[in-house]
Length: 273
Image 1 (cartoon, helix red, strand yellow):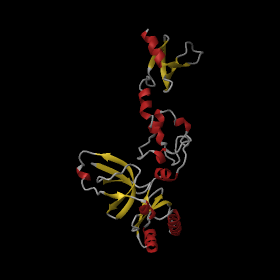
Image 2: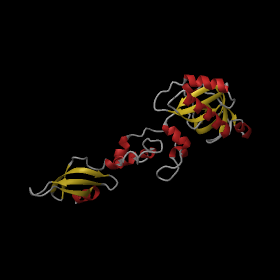
Image 3: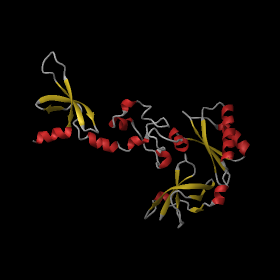
């Protein structure tokens, strides 16, 4: 038994459908039936299961694999741009604080879904009324995040490669300042560790566990240590180099404390000897 995770728009969430013995794979476009009508979506992932969970036993099956004629039924980019431009005029007319990003048309033309970003909640009830009167169809407005916008419209990241979210990332994970701190990049400033979306870069999560493991091999800051017969205290870490900064107390009152960098692995070997 297979479950296909299907997405109808790059910024939309993923929905589960049954795969009824069809020869489909990730990346294929398929036709499915929803409560709102027929939709054309892209298979993001296919999951094989031995038994469907209770909450998924009522899943609808994929109707068929989409062909050229099915895809050709969707409005082209010129029609999408025209719809967005008209909606932007209405947004300005109603003085709404929102930025339109994209519009999605259902396969049967019974529904239009406008995606937008905004800093807060937006009362778009009057906007919807005007859109329904003009397009004579069911209208939905979906507020998305800046990361979703970057996934759809972004290009290259600061590394020079294409954005991960446009390439292989299917789901956004929570990126925290703790990850930046663990990798000792906070001092670079928020601009240098933020992506095009303005949020902390997703790649901070890739090596986070590795950094935590390496940091665990170093004595915590504040630990008192012996270095070549002198007593000192750990005041800093260099995780990738596996070294620590140790402050040694001055031997005389007129001298300053000495700060040295100690290779932990070499220090451990010397202690064993």
